[in-house]
Every structure is written in structure tokens, then in C-alpha cells.
Length: 326
Image (cartoon, rainbow, N blue to C red; front, side, top):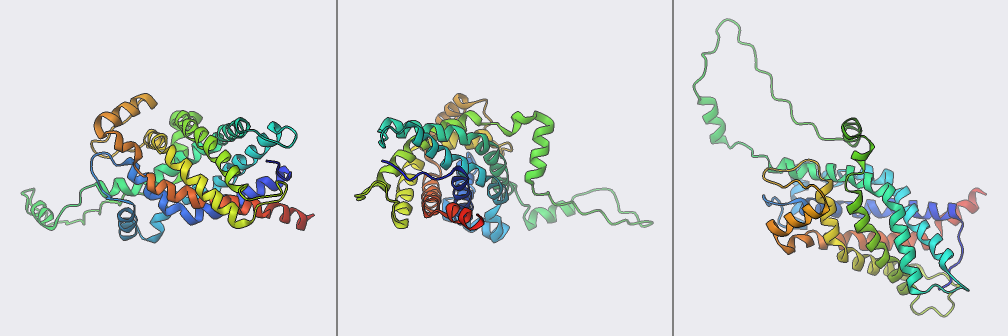
């Protein structure tokens, strides 16, 4: 399939705009996916809808967007690198206007490898912020009877001379991306931000190897002129279809990556020494089904995310903007 050549700056703009629009639309479902994948012992949430409902009830509507600022900041370079790298590799591997299937797979592999540079620290920070609400929900809240019993417990007699009011316990502060970044850099150096990089690479390379060839072929269906740009609706549907298939296919790897990148664990939850240790512990304690936790959420996130991304990308927003500025 021969594609119209687009300048690299236009590709970067298209990828960035597409990422911003897509993340804004689907971020609450991505938050539910992270919380469901991290559940090990205590089942705080029964499913995606239950997770979203409880999040809104306890943290408000904007609680569903915890960690969104990190994504919105870094998704522009992440999506720009992914989409632009795939196009560059496809053009380099094409011969006489034709790109064989092995070339499509190899181009996707290259794109997935390139994006890990940005994806790993982005998801590392995002996961900590997304999972904070789940960990808070696990902490037991004393009932009225327990509070009354604690108040009636014997203790030293109150002073009648100077009864100073007891300071109220300060509420636990919500983690921030800046605070997490500073702590990681101080305690573990730059490697702290790249925790789980191997698992991220294991997820993103197969995803891109499945997604990009499948998208290219779906996007070319019914086209007589291979030089022509596909209509918006076709690019959108091709992105949704290819994204959902690739997302479900790599969900087990996404579960492993999420568990490895989660720094704070709930009571009785496992910590892992690496990819192999994580895989063994999940299999032993939770069974094979645990590797598909959040698969529905992931498909619902990735399908519209890449549908929007490819739709905006093929609309040529970057080209139009550069023409306007030029």
C-alpha cells in the first residue's frame, strides 16, 4: 500500500492533537482498568461500572481523571513518536510502492520500541495517581460503635487546669506527579522512572506489530486508488477495530506491567521482583483469569483512542496548521 508522504512536523502535530483528544475522551475507563488490574485480595470493585460509580461517589467526578494531567502532558510526544515512527519505517521499508506484510510488522515493531522512551515514565506516574483511590478505599473506616468504644476506653483523667484542644489528625495528602517524580529521582535516580520498562516494551512492541498492519489493511479495504487518502469514517472504524483486537491480545502483558509499576500495595498484596516472578505469583495466587483483568476496559479505552487518533491523523490537521502558519 503506497501512502501519501507527509512531512515529519505535520506527523508530530497530527499525533499530538490525536493523543490529546483521545485521552480526554477515554481516561475514566483507563482509570477503572488500572484499579481492576491491581486488585489482588480485597475486591473493592466488582467491575468497570461499579469502579466508576464508587470513584464518583467517594472522590467526585474529577476523581475519574486522577493522573490525567500526566497523560495530557506526555501523550503528545508519545503518540507523535508512535505514529510518526510507524510512518517513517513504512516508507523506508516500502519497495516500488509496495510494503509486504513482514515490512508492516517490522514497522510496527520499530514504532512500539521508539515510544517506550516516553510511555514508561508516563505510565509509571499515571498508575500511582490512578491507584491512590483504590488504596484509600481499602483502609478500614471505624464505625460509630467502634468510635464510641474508643472514646469510652479508660485513660488518664482530663486536666481541669488547662484543657488544651487535641489537634485533629491531618488528612492524608493526595500524591502528586511532581512529588512522586522527585521522590523517585532522589531515591532511585532516573531508573526509578523507568521501572517496568521491560514489561512496557513487551506489551507495546507486540501491540504495534498487531495494530499497525491490521489498521493499514482495514483502512485500505474497498479502495481502488491506493494513492488516495481514506475517508474519515473508514480511518476511525479501522483504528477502533485494530485497536480493540490488539488491546485484548496484549492484556496479560499489560496486567504484568501495571503490577510491576505500582509502588504502593494494599494489605496482603504481593510485591514482585521482576516479570518472571510477577507471572508466577499471579498464576499461583489468582489463576489464569487474572491475566485478563481489565480486558474489557482496555478494549473500550484503546478502540476509541486509536480510532480518534487515526481519524485526526488522516484528516491532516498538522498539514492544515502548517499551511496556515506558512
